[in-house]
Length: 281
Image (cartoon, rainbow, N blue to C red):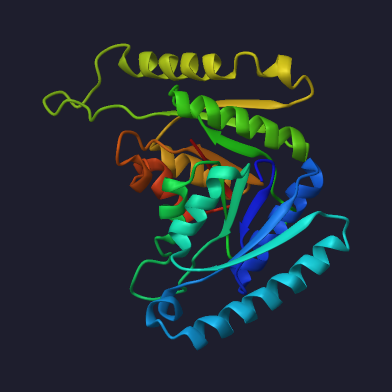
C-alpha cells in the first residue's frame, strides 16, 4: 500500500471533495486509491453490535458506489471499512501509504470554532503527508500556483520538495514564501536601529535562496516565484492560499509527543483552510 493514496471517505460534502481531489491526483500519478470508511463517534461508543453492523454495511455500500465511479475513469481502487476511532485508525493507516487525503471537518456558522480538531489531530500524527481538502468547491478558475512556506528548517525542506513536485504535476508556478517579523520597535525611540529591518529582509532572502537551490535542476520547466514578505507567517500564507491551487506547510512537531502537536503556523493555516492544504513532515 506504500504507493497508495488513502482517502478518509465520508458520505458528506467535505468527503466528496476529498475523494475528487484524491482521484485527480491518483490519475496524474498513476497511483492506487484506498477508500477507507470508518464507523466511529457515537455508534462506535454505544457498543450495540447491530448498530455497528448496520453502519458498516451502509458504509461499505457507499464505498462500493464511489469505487465503481472511479474505476469507470480507469483508476485502481480498493475499499476498506473499520469501526473505531477515525483519528487513530487513519494515523495507523498512514504508516503504509504515500499520501493521506481527508475532508475538512467544518461545523458551520455558530458561536464555537468553525472547524473541529479531527483534521488537525490527524495531520499532527500521520506518518505520511496529509492533504486536508476544504468543504467547498475548489474551482480552478481564478486560482493559480502552489504556495509553500519556507523557514529553513529540515521539515521546511521536505515541504518545498513536495510543493515543487505538486506544482510540476499541475503545471502551476511554485510560490515559495519566507516571511520575516521584526521585534517591536524600542519604546523609548519608536524607531528601529539603523540597518535592522534591511538585515532581517536580507536574512529571509538568504533562507529562501538556500531552500530553492537545486530545484531548477530537478524541475527544469518549473516556474518559481520566490517571495520574501514582512508579516506573520500564517497570515501571509493564508492570503496567498486564497487564490492558489494548493498550499504546503511543514509540521513542526518534534520529540516524544510530536504526534499530538502541530506547529502554531500549521495549526493556524489549517484553521483557515483557504485552499487544499498539505502538511508535510
